[in-house]
Amino acid sequence: MKTPYKNIYTVLKLNRLIVLAVIICAAIISIVSVVLVLKVHRDTVNHAFVVNTEGSVIPLKLVSQKENIEVEALAHLELFHTYFYNIDASNYEKNLEKALWLGNSSVDALYRQKKADGVYNRLLQYSLVQKVLSIKSEVDIQKEPYTFKTTTIFEVNRGSVIDTYELKTTGNLIHVDRNFPKNTHGLLITNFFENSLRKIEQDQES
Image (cartoon, rainbow, N blue to C red; front, side):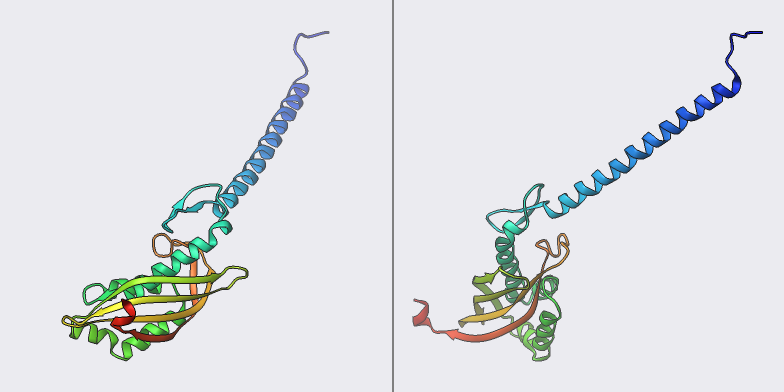
């Protein structure tokens, strides 16, 4: 006897096939979505920052970091030398803490040596003001670690007397993870060394 209804097993089998097809399609879509998200994330990390003409880092997309490495390196060096040498009794602790985020143990060793030599105690005792006047750096970006040479001109204000000095430093730069706002350029100074320090006489300045 014929019935208008299909066999229940046929219906269940068809439903199962439909469910399996939906699950497989959903799995494929999920896998593709994850792959695309990972690719976008990787591209964003590698191309997410631009450097303006002043050396500041601005989060943006689709800008190659390598194209801006020289600008970032110079800005990093200027920032470090400003923090490390532009100090007075009121700001030296804060500035040196910021400078230590931009260099490795070689910077920390120099800081500890200066501290042991009483440099910062004299800063406090005599209310000295050490002001950076100019920072000029040369960086070789052909191969990492990047070598650099920096000439920093700064003056020491002793109240009635102001002396000007030229300091030459050298070292290397390596890439590290960016850390906003402590290390925005994602670079770290290594093998930092103060090569020479000389007093600039007044007639030389003029």
